[in-house]
Amino acid sequence: MGLPTYTARVAEGDGAGFALQAARGTGWSTLKGIVNKGATAVGVIVAARFLDPSDYGASALVLGVCSLVVLLPPLVMCDVLIARAARAGAASAAAGRMVTLTALASSAAIAAAIPVVAWLYPNFPRGTVIGLMLVFALRPVLDALSVAPVSMMRIGLRFRALAVIDGGSQLF
Image 1 (cartoon, rainbow, N blue to C red):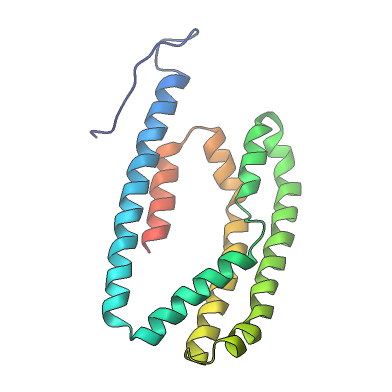
Image 2 (image 1 turned 120 degrees about the vertical axis):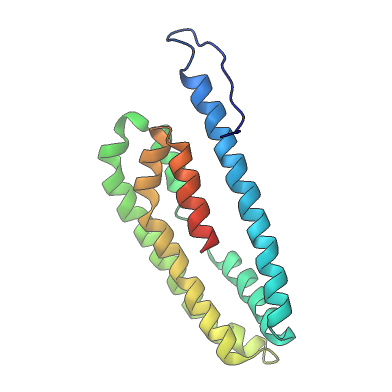
């Protein structure tokens, strides 16, 4: 497919081992990052073109506030599960409960911030700010649902599938 490959031999195996998997994973991750950044740039330009300035400003405000309020992004738990790969299956239930609780707390914090943000920024359309913050409040919970599957895919070195799933979800 034209992605960068690396055929270094590993100490054990036929040369297609871990080094090749890591190089292919890097290629897929890089491609996903480039596509996502391009899609983000197009999205920003389209949003700026079709939204009026107050709606565009409200979206930037909401993005900033929600980024500040979420203190423990659920996907951080993926790294913990990967570091404990041998026990990841057994630990995923406990990790799932923990990320669900932190995600619910983050979502509640975003929801609690809605009246404060609406009061502090009366120049922005109140309905737009409230609606956008409610949508953003869903993200931590949705991210929490993906922790165990994403961790297992990363442990299994399924980088292409991860790039397609993650890239596709960000595009839509």
